[in-house]
Image 1 (cartoon, rainbow over the protein chains, first blue to last red):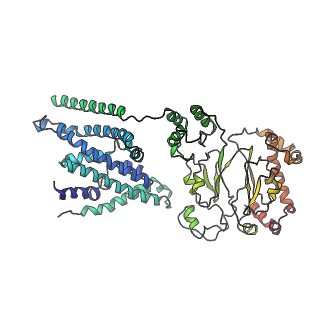
Image 2: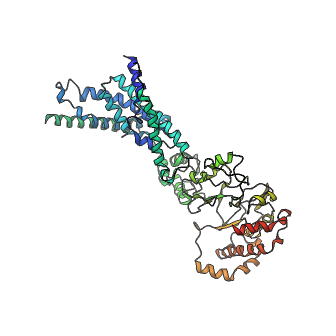
Image 3: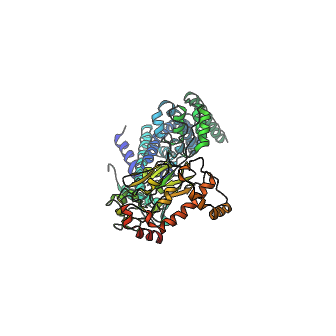
Length: 204
Length: 346
């Protein structure tokens, strides 16, 4: 196992290819649940949790069913084109399952994440992470690391944004900019800042 | 063709498997909920305002179902909801006294400022700068922190002072919590007319007259006038004990500052038709003034007399303006006139 590659994937997912600021995935919860930093952190943690698990679950389904060399000896015949729809199915069921599981076994974690879990069912950041795992030919460990750190990148982004939005409430904006427009402008400026990381070259 | 069939088959199998897992999980991981809790939750308005002191309606429903909370805490749903919950829980319903938020400031001091505040438009941050821009240390700052906190859009800043919209107020208490001046409080609206002293100033009389056109000077005339002894003076400020107040409005007619207000409460009381009102206005007031005040208990306060009382107030306040000798306290004797003049201008 190449630790160096894992660190590269992790830093890349958190800073350089941040899911929100450079890939523009998961914008819906990013704008919707960022009004206070408390809820933003809850949402970020839930996304991290689900992204890690989804990466772990989707990897074997992809490898042993969709592009299995045993079932489809001829690579042209495999079900690669089905990845998107199958992954959506998997993620949706997984989230539902996690919700039920948490409610029964870990009520405290359920009360912390429970409200946000259903919101993630169709979150494109989660779908994005599993699709990218496949596209980048990541191994199982690499997939999970990419999923978890991608979620951490989401957490960082939504927390930063919510902290700014809390301050933004007290600012005096032109009337036409008040509320959502100024939040979008702020998100754009934050994305520009994160653009600065794109020059980072990890490990030569 | 075979690819399509395989694809369909794979998707169908996957869907069936996940469906089976979820169905199985819903049985295995089913959390037993108290059916009462769900029934209670259905009765609640679902505003999740937190006015009951529990985190949202579901939190309150859980507390009620487990017997930890009384059935009548929901201020939004009031009586009907409490009755329903009581029925579910098999408890005798306790009547809910309707409460509403009241801002204890008239905004009479908005023109008297120490400095021009240009900072963040928020009451808390404004109050941190040398005690706020107002000369009156107790007055409403008017930056609308309460307005932002209100989940029902029931409080608005008008002419520099927060005003509660009594039709919309649900007494959730959010504004009471956020006001850095602590001038908003929940008051029980139980009498036919609600009497309020819209001032929070604990400053002495002369100070108040300098910084405000209507503030309470602590003269105590209302306390003496009150037939029920419901008004007491604490820290130079008259306070109404709503346990005793019957809403007769005599204090309002006697107040030399014309501060005490008597409100109709249209939300729960049938308004008297306008025509009747006009005729009563013409005939009744004098009779009503002669009615001995102490006999005005809640039972005798029929809508008609109450109506007349309302008119009396406007009459007698005018009288009071003409005859400032009613005012007996030293502070007010010094300069009752200038204060009144400014109030007229406003």
